[in-house]
Image 1 (cartoon, rainbow, N blue to C red):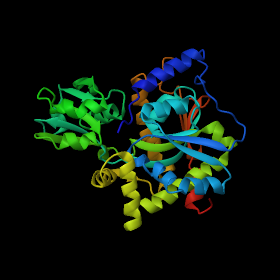
Image 2 (image 1 turned 135 degrees about the horizontal axis):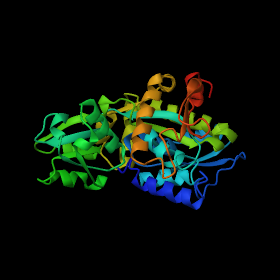
Image 3 (image 1 turned 90 degrees about the horizontal axis):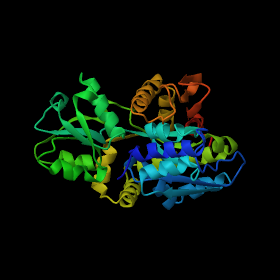
Image 4 (image 1 turned 180 degrees about the horizontal axis):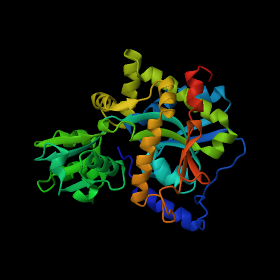
Amino acid sequence: MMRRSVLAGVAAITVALSLNGCSGKPAGSTDASATKKDFAIGWSIYTGWMPWPYAQQAGIVKKWADKYGINIRVVQVNDYVESVNQYAAGKLDGVVSTTMDALTIPAAGGKDTTVLLIGDYSNGNDGVVLKNGKSMADIKGRSVKLVELSVSHFLLARGLELNGLKLSDVKTVNTGDADIVGAFASPSVNAVATWNPQLASVRAMPGATEVFDSSKIPNEILDTMNVSTETLKANPNLGKALAGIWYETMAIMTRNDATGRAARAAMAKAAGTSEASFDDQLNTTHLYAQAKDAVAYAQNPDLITVTDRVRRFSFAHGLFGPTAKSVDAIGITFPGGKALGDPKNVKLRFDPSYMKLAADGKL
């Protein structure tokens, strides 16, 4: 399950800016304000995103698209970063990603993006594992294998911070997510940070101890449905349909009956994993299954606090691109007129209005 690695995204930002004379408009962008009928939404394999292909398979996507007189294609992109890059380039109208990657790839590349749906947060799907260690204090001085500049890197930084340590107290070693399990099996490797399903495999190895996980930083690794602000403004029915699709699917998959089990089994199959493994991963994924809960969090000051942590980490590691001079280079807006960063360069917007329509039964 390739997910949440922004290395390729940094390269894409640099190329996009250079090709456009640093204009802030991604290369190849096809956004247009005109009303249209056909939309493409990108997804890649991850626990919290499997409801989307299920919704397509079950006819839920077509049901809601038909209601609003539009066509929606839910498109699988095999590589997560590529899915976000395709969205940033205007080849997709929306994409699922973490808020960190929505900020550091499309928004940092100049694409005005709206966070339409707050889907879930990692509640233990990401972790730090040691050999011959019982706490985060034991990581000091070690080399840590991880996907650098990904949410694993962010998780490690937060784990160190919460335990009185700094990133400079360890050495990070960039390692592909597909290589993490094999690396930890080597006697010479004694520290990794990774996500499921690799995390489950690493944690089960002899002598392994998970010393920190994402349940300690709720909502900081936040997964969302992101759409082009320009496209959404011209086509609000897209937002309504996506909200309708999401919450109908949530209602089905969270049922504790044969219907719910069948939905989860279909998602597991599409993800290429077993039903038991998928259920285990759902246990460490906090789904915002109820629209009212997602709206409440969108309006919670904590969202601003955690987004500020994410943007500070991202800027400090060069993920805002080569032209960004400060952490405030990119404007981010929240409900109630609140904002972070440059109000003249708003590129990421948390808009709960479509979630609220769902919560109020007005879709």
